[in-house]
Amino acid sequence: MLNSITIHGRLTKNPEVNTTPNGILVCNFTVAVDRSFSRQGEERKADFFSCTCWRGLAARDGKHFAKGKEILLTGEMQS
Picture 1 (cartoon, rainbow, N blue to C red):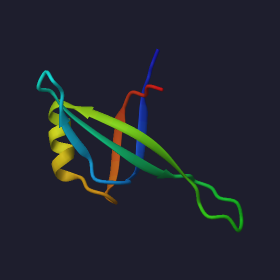
Picture 2 (picture 1 turned 45 degrees about the vertical axis):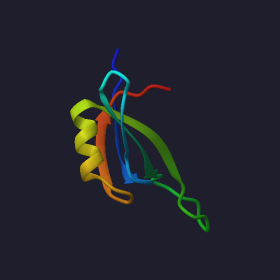
Picture 3 (picture 1 turned 60 degrees about the vertical axis):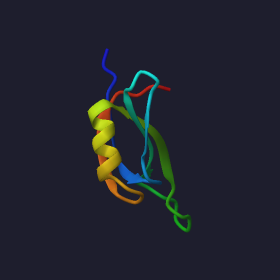
Picture 4 (picture 1 turned 30 degrees about the vertical axis):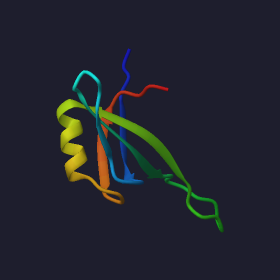
């Protein structure tokens, strides 16, 4: 089986970088993705994805991304 997702959107706030009790870096952020369609007379809607990255990616993302920045990421989805 394949569990893969690609998300292209904008960060809703600055990423939060923390360290686990074991010393591993973890970065949490939310990405807003505009829907590709909207009904006439309605405002375009968006879907929001909570994302987590670990270790080296967490350090990089925490430094280089900020609220409103466009981001493209791939990974696996858990719900």
